[in-house]
Image (cartoon, rainbow, N blue to C red; front, side, top):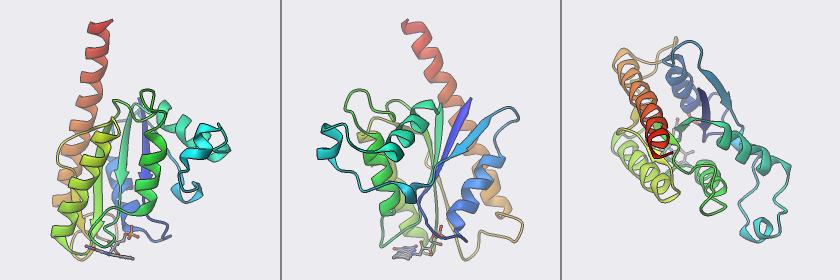
Length: 185
Ligand SMILES: Cc1cc2nc3c(=O)[nH]c(=O)nc-3n(C[C@H](O)[C@H](O)[C@H](O)COP(=O)(O)O)c2cc1C
């Protein structure tokens, strides 16, 4: 099982990165986790894509998404929405149409934010956008408050329990997809 963790904040002290790390800690032994620095990606350009000229970083990113069985995506709330880094990454991995790296991938959604209701909005936006991109968001996601839900060691217990449940849903979704493909073959 390969899990790709994507964090939509460029901050070195990112709480979304900390939330994503806490989610990765809930994965069972033997699961391989990888990450990709979304700040290295250029803004998606369909013209360059049509020319097959998107560059090595985009090719490497699409390969990383393709190689993943499931994804964990963490986005900050920026002005009520997901960050541009996450949206750009989703746009890049949503093409080529019909053979997109994101196609059918189960995705667990996370956000660390300041204002709880915007966290709900971010999770709903992420689910909507990922579904349109062909992925399979699982569960409702986890929204963690940067004010109350982080400790020096990681995340507060209620959030830790939500992460455990979300990771269980993610692994179950991966298994369901595999069975579906096997029975369809
Ligand atoms: C440009 C900008 C806009 C923001 N807008 C919101 C917002 O609409 N709602 C919210 O809850 N937090 C908002 N925040 C706060 C961030 O979500 C918060 O600082 C979070 O910790 C950033 O994620 P990071 O710690 O992973 O970098 C905003 C922060 C920035 C920089």
